[in-house]
Amino acid sequence: MGGGQPLLLVVDDEPDIRESLAQWLAFELGDVEIMEASSAEEAEKAMASREVDLVLCDFRMPGEDGISFLARASVFAPATSRLLMTAFADQGVALRAINEARVERFLRKPPDLAEFAGAVRDALASRKRRVAQARDVARAFGRGGDG
Image (cartoon, rainbow, N blue to C red):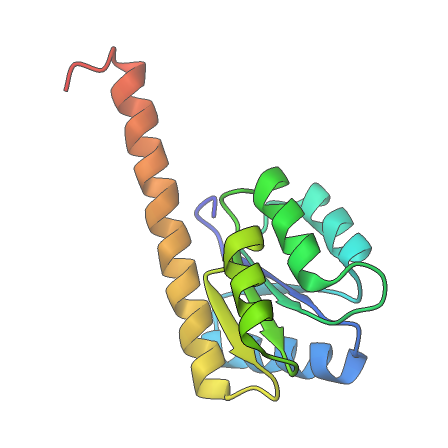
């Protein structure tokens, strides 16, 4: 979040859901930029090209599932907020999402749009706080850690 618009990445293999969700989030949140990806591989390429503030990823996709992708993303982009959405929610999936991928929220499909918007706003605010805290720590240590 280099001072510009937050960048969101919506990852879902179903084009209608991905495009509708991206358009709705852009409308609902206003001052955001949204990229779309249809697979974990496409999402990783997008994240390699730009710093993404938040990833909203589907669980069930061909190839790599959303939890495995988000777990890898937590390593190569640790500051990026991660949200998982699924129509196939069960306790095991939720625990994997939290423990393996360190997702901030687990959202059910079809989406409750108010819940989705609130979760995205909360995750963006959380990322902003984490980035500010990291900057403060870097400044403190950059000055010799005198505080």
